[in-house]
Structure formats: structure tokens, C-alpha cells
Amino acid sequence: MGGARIFVLHKKDMIKFGVIVLAGLTLLVAGLVLMLSGGSGGSSAARYNPGTYSSSIILNGEPLHIRVTVSENEILSIYMSDMAETQRVFYPLFEPQMQDLAQEILQHQSAHINPSTDYPVTTAILQEAVRSALELAHTEMYAGEH
Image (tube, rainbow, N blue to C red; front, side, top):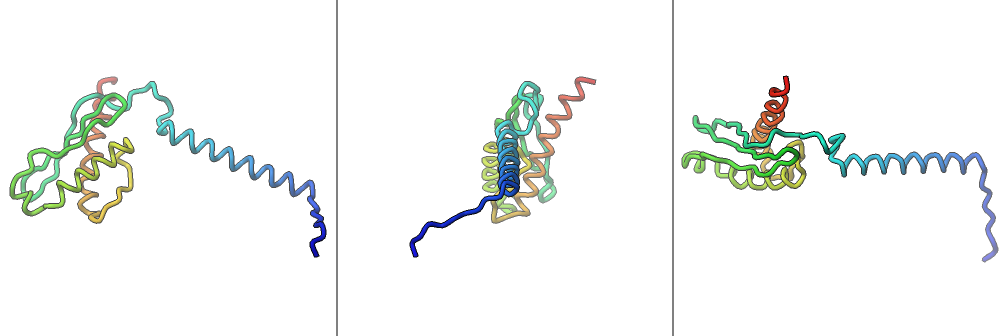
């Protein structure tokens, strides 16, 4: 029973397999190149106008400012400012969620992420404020060129 086994390989099947493997490798390499380059299409063009930009969230009738500091190609910091004591009491999750969200955004260098959180509504509100501030960095850069 331990005899030799004979495999028959058809040339047509081998060509199909080779084409599929080649296509898969091509897609894999293209995906890695896009991920490593950040999808920006080129590193020489500036993504942001350097500076600090802010957006506001109204909580308990008072504004809470989300500030984002950027360089030409990088998000440098994200933080909340001007949080009133009443906001801290009524919205205790905002500060810790902002810290967690800021850490993830800085790691990925994008506000278009799916953050891991136990508080999706709070995180979504903060994430939208960060996106608004980053849009200002883009908008002001292009407004000066027209």
C-alpha cells in the first residue's frame, strides 16, 4: 500500500494557476505600496497648511473647542480646550475618549479611522470635530492659491 503515486498535471490547469497566483501577487504588492505611501500619491505635495485649527462642539449650552496642530505633512497634536466644570460633570467621558481618539489618529495620521471604543456616540462626536478642524487646514491652504 505504500506504492508510488502518480499525478497528472494538465498544461492548461498549470497556466490558469500561474495567472491567478501572478494576479494575486500583483494586487498584494499594489496594496502594500498604497499603504506604505499613505495613499497620498506623492510625498512632495503638502497635505496641510501648518498651524493650529479648531472646531467647536456645543455641550450644555457652552462651546468646547477641539484643537488640531499640523505641519505640512503630519498631524502633530489633538487636544480639547476650554472645557467648563459643568461640562466635565455632565460629560465625564469626553476627556478620556478624546485622549484615546487622539492617540489613534496620531498613530494612523488620519481622522478617517474606525476607532476601537466602548462609547461610539461620544467618539463619533469628537471624531467629527477633529475632521472639521483638519478640513480647515486643507481649505485654508487652497484658498491662498486662488
